[in-house]
Image (cartoon, rainbow, N blue to C red):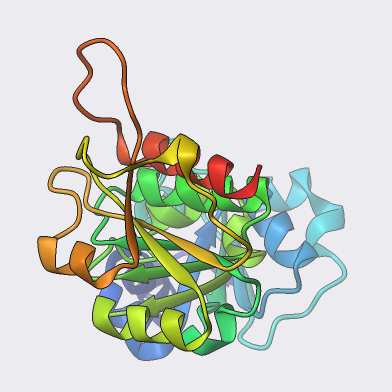
Length: 258
């Protein structure tokens, strides 16, 4: 089906899903953009509801789109519409609406090693940490305490497909997260900037552990640090006072799994 009008109900829905967190939450849907992310979604058998792409994109990747049917439709859209709805600076003209992938918190805690993101606000940091978690073999991730939304287009794009391969839960309350960790016998380690905390190089994490990474500017709240089993810090040389959240998280995840 060809769509040429910005007033088409399907285009309006696509635009709302890309633009508004509330719309995504209410419908349990999100949008991916670009051929690489789309191929990852297909490979991981994501629940793809509908696809929108320009004629140029269809002609460029005919083998990707010719063999599948989608329950809510397959649409060819104009280049102008693609530019209008796109969140990307250089749109590829490929969009897909997909069912939400997050799970119940208890269902993601079977693997033993967990990454907990607490009030991280930068979508690039979240995406980088999801990719890093996958790269080092950590399968379980929890986003809590007003983290930037998992389905923010910038988060989805920066995960480079990891969002489809990880077990991810979203929870408003860190207290609930801690209770769930304890119930599953998982020890929590709060990342802090404090020379009196345990040096990460001397920590034996064990097989059931969770790294808790806090806000980029303010770190973890004191009360949240207090709920964790141990505090850890990355000792630094020179005059550096702290590390970027994704850099610190990467170091911690590496130490957890090496």
